[in-house]
Image (tube, rainbow, N blue to C red):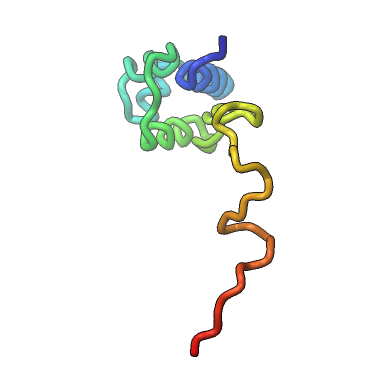
Length: 103
């Protein structure tokens, strides 16, 4: 059974907070959020809002995106691109479609 997104985020947050040397209370004050919010985030019962994520990163002196490490879809998951590698998205390097000339 795989961990939920909230549980994986909780692991990342606990690890980053420990590395920064801050207590939950200190992190809450520095990030401008409540201690109970930090507790819920670290317990994996809540996912952060974008502003909270950015404030947490800033309070610990890291990029908030670092707290999202490992949360994206896995390569072999049901969330991967089902069109395969031949899909022609907007950033595709393949030839552009032929356009008819205006008369």
